Image (tube, rainbow, N blue to C red; front, top):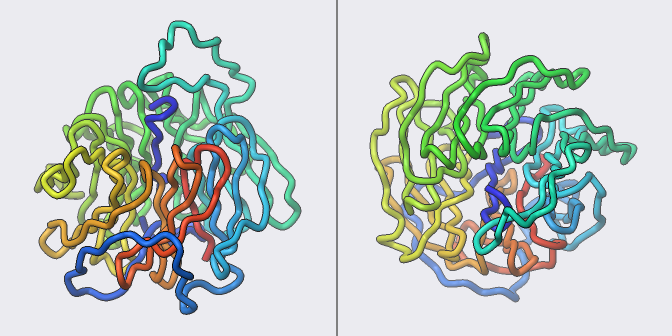
Length: 364
């Protein structure tokens, strides 16, 4: 979705590609907790080598945060309008979706926007050892993506084109283009690397692509305006938050059927479910709610909401440190990152993170 309808999948749930999309501690029911924005981060969190990468959609940069100190250490110029952000499986390359399409969104007359600059579309590959940036083609208006576990291919959602592009990571050439419905956003590859799931905001569906053939093999009807996908570590279930629907669809991986729909507006009136992440042990799913200003915690044992964490303005992208101690959410309107202690379910700190932070990736 353009502009302030900020997508993510981040947007990205399992330990893969040097990227931790979610984690948490403990398997027991987690109590709800209030927000605190000034306390120090827990000392048991990440090692000094752990870095948090935050794409800044309007700032045209990626903010880099040292997770041990929770301070900004540098910024990276990856290209125009960076959104989706991940690391390659070897952890050596930061991958960022950049776009030449103008920012629209709610309240914007898109007929008055300037035409897109397709020369700015692409996938930026940042060599983290040298800082050099190389850009490959990513189709029209690349918004989000995921990388196969072997690091060979990248699946990209092309928002303006209603397609998913499949790119060879070795040289950037296009392997296939798959129709997935209007305004695709969330992209997630199953843990076994056999399927790529792509959400269509316009159709309210998820297209399942067989990675071996790059053919669409199923279409799953979910909530209105689905924004991301996350899988259980064993690949048995997928979770699909839907912004306009205010819900999360729990989908059986084998049958591609919806098992359960969770109405998050019951716990958070006005919830707009967006970003998603899951703990490595698969016990908890984390869902940001955008304008609902919360992070919802779902226990996967019975697929129910067990905690609601107050978060700053419109949390969207979400990722968790490898040890599971801290959760990071990108908060676009307030231009900051919220840091949540996973043990207490409290916001312990907020730090500035560029202009309109969108997605979050964390190194191992």
